Image (tube, rainbow, N blue to C red):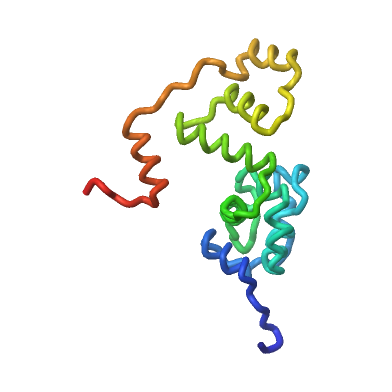
Length: 185
């Protein structure tokens, strides 16, 4: 290896492949961090995440709150002079963390599973059902009753049962889970 060259970590290779990005274009300028709408809930900034990927810090990254707290608002991408798709990087990291057999189930993974399960079943989330399911699964208390009543009264949470989607939607979900293979043709 010559001076000026750096070794590419195995994590960087995997994330770049999954997210279709080139992390070597990151200049560590901090524009992504300056625009991040969820930075207060994160333990690492977007630029720190990219640096941790390059340093091959698997355990630190996959156990961080940041990958689960990213709301994919794309502000970081809009501000990035290198045009790095940071939300795709976060998606790739979530997929890697989720697929790890040693990943310890945490509140974020429980919520992720419940959220995706509802989208697969109903085509969208149902706030009331999601709130109750998460509370039971993560063994956390529900919000105070006065807050729940206030949400219901102001119609902030829909308590009507979710509708079941048709056969075409269920077929599409099944096809996506199987990797997009067309079995009907």
